[in-house]
Length: 444
Image (cartoon, rainbow, N blue to C red; front, top):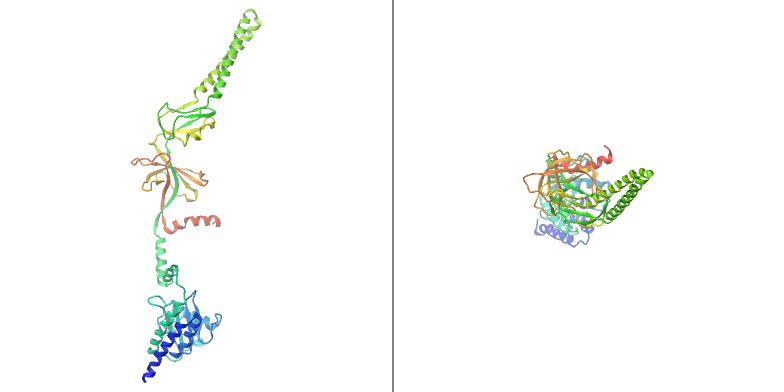
C-alpha cells in the first residue's frame, strides 16, 4: 500500500467531519451520517438513532426520511432502544445476546455483521448511536476510524439540541436503571422506618377554676372600674350598672308607700266611729306592707348595681369599651377573676386528625411570638364529641395542665400544641390523611 492509499481514509475522514459541521439542519446531518459515511468504510445498511423524547430512528440509509410505521423501522427501534438502554459499547453487535423478539427477525432485516457506534461527548452518557451493517466482519482499523468520525458526528448533532435545563440534567441520572433501583430501595426502607404520630392543634392558655362575675340584674353597664389584667382584691369595684331606671322605680315605690300609709290612717280613724270601716283596716294594713316590700326590693337592687370582686386575682376580659352601654341580662357573664399562677391549656384537635389520647399523655405548647420557648403539659381530659370552634371547623376540646416545675405562661397566650401518639411506619404517617379521605369517598 503506497502513501496515497494510506492517506485516502484520512482525507475521507476530514471531508466527512467538514460535511457534518456544515450541515444546516438535523435532517441534512442525518443524511450525511447514514449515506456518506460509506466513503470511509463500506456497508450495506445504516441507521441513526437519537434519544430525543422516547427515542426514535432519525435516519436510515436510502430514503430521505424514515417511515415510523414501516416494519423495518419499528424493528430497528426495538434493536436500538435495547442497545441504548443496556449501554452497549462500540463494536460488533452480539446477536446471541439480543432479546428473543429482536433476534428472531435479525436475518430478515440485517446482514450478519452489524457495528454499533454510540455517540456521546466527554463523560456524558450517549444520547445517539449509529448502526452500520454488512456481510463481512469489521476490522479493528475500520472501527477505530469510524469511532473518530462518530465522535465528530456526535459533536455536530449536539449543536442542534437546545441546552438542557437543570431539571433535565437532574433527570438524566434517574434514567439509569441502577440508580433508579437504589433510589427505590432507599424509599422503601425509609417508608418502613418507625416514626412518632403527631398532630398540631391551635391552643390557648386559660385560667384554671376562675371566678365568673355575672350581671346581678337586667340593665345597662354604665361604668367599668378596672382595666384588663388588672390585679384586684376582695371588695374591689369591678363595674356598675346604670341606676336611672332603678331610681325612678324606687321613687315610685316610695310614693306608693306614702299613699298606702295615708289610706291606712284614714281607715283606722273611720273605724273608731263606724263599725263598717273596721273590715277595711286589715286590707289597708296588708297593702301598706306590700308597698314596703316593693320599696325594700327596689332598694336592694339599687345597692347591687355596683359589682365587687369576691376574691383576689386579675380581671380577665378583652376591653371595657365592648361593654359600656351594653344591655345585659340577669346572670350574663361579664368578666372573670382568675389567679395568674393557676392556668391550664385548651387545645382544639381537628376531628380529621384525632389521635388515640388518654389522661396523662404529654403534649408540647409552642407559644406565638416566642419561637425559642416551649411548655410541657399533661392531658387532663378529652371531649367525647367534636364541636364547632370559632374558626368554623369541627374539633375535639383537649384540656391539659402544665408541669409544676416550669414557669406558667400568661393567661390568654395563643400558640400551637403538638400532641404525640404511638409509633407507625413513615409511609403510614405520610398517607394517613389521603387514605382516610379515600376511604370516606369509596366507602371501604
